Image (cartoon, rainbow, N blue to C red; front, side, top):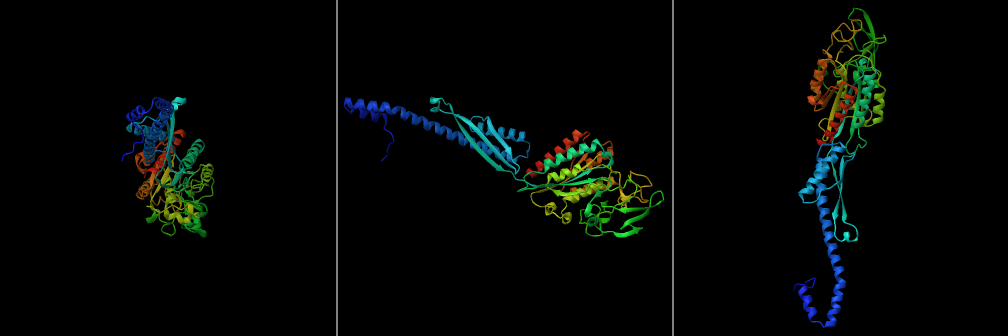
Length: 459
């Protein structure tokens, strides 16, 4: 038997005619009294259904929009907001729902995209008491896939960088550190290593570990504390070993093999006693991979400019900073690079210079065919590996073959040869930047940071 929840009008009328006149009056009064309540309940039900439908549609639209933003490679707050709102309203339109004017999309440090949206739904019963709409609120959150980032940066601190150029580079480099190294280091990390370079790279207390220990005293072949040789002018010279290193030679010249064998060690470096010697060892030393922005920026602030440009040595050391083969050298486990091919890992090298690579070595001394210095400062030998330019080309090729992304920044370069090198070395022409002012240098570093952050969330 079917039960009807409400009496039909016909049944009500039949019931009414069967009643006496006085009874009918009572029914009419009761019905008239109940009618506003019934209508109110009906309108409430209509408003509730309208609100539930609007909220369901809005939640579906917001879920889809937040997921779409999460799958994009955008990191800019304004771009994320614009994309999210555009997709949200497109989904609303597709479902026949009204557009949303109040919505917010954000990306957190741990790469979670959060979307919030609200919509005013017109209502009937509330309008009777002065309220024409009901506000519906929704929330969606999607975790982006991400990658760990290891970045080695080679920064030119040669003599030509003195004054304003060095100050501009410091500003740009510190901003680059701030943009790459995130506050949130879990579940994915972002680390930066620094390599200041001029005619050599200073490894500080680790010099003996990378270029080998030296015997005491003076000798006529490199390998002891004091190296005696003839310069290109034919004069006998004695230079002292420093904590800097020069280029590798032999079969390991263009590799990142661990420097724990005689055949894989880094090149020794010898300096003269004269102030201003072209083969000086800069005071600023390397800083392995770190998440400590303060330490990284303090290191940059301490840079001073001196010496000539052995860009290939700075480039090689920036590679070593992200090479797992060098990881055993760093006492702090957090500074050790992950293995090549590790899932969710991107390795990057950035090479910055302001001039043509003009310095190479033989036996750890400025070579006679270098484009910098004179016969009094140069050993009476040509560079063991050839020019700095050609060595850089070989290193760039080897770095890229390891799957490392290579950016180059040629700051205010006047030499077309140097500009060509930046283009050749970079992963692609779009990875090469040639800024001609301090402002343009900051823009270049910002663009690189933006691309690295995009890689972090899109691969």
